[in-house]
Image (cartoon, rainbow, N blue to C red; front, side):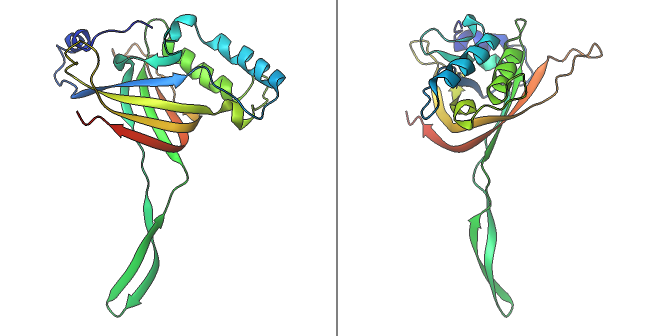
Length: 210
């Protein structure tokens, strides 16, 4: 997929009332290494799922299904949550401790469609990784994505014109949970969008300190 400079992307938003303070790119690994799975099952799985993607969907250098900033409308980044436990009361006072209230990270990404149907292909590919058209579920070791990478980009690029990455989230051991409904309507001029929900077992974050 061809890269477009941040400067060109800024010009795309020059007529917007509110400029974005930063942009996102989202990347999915199309090729993975599977362990503990019969090679024949892997072959059937890869043969079935790859037909939902076009060669042009994948970055020629990294092999990633990489979405450019104009595709990414919203990203909701989850984090750990806690609840009170072990409450002990001393007269009018109460003491408690925080304990984890957590059952996995739900990552939500809203993506805007383009004229070639890139986002719909992504949705079908992710759904095909969960279940075969016959109704047979793939083993979790196959259907799980090793990671989803979300990069936060600054408006102003580096001096050499490359994207300036503010920080990177890497969500690991990811499954697709839901693809929201798309509305096709002549009543307004809004673009077609799809809302994706993923479950991730854990994540790492790297902050650019420059």
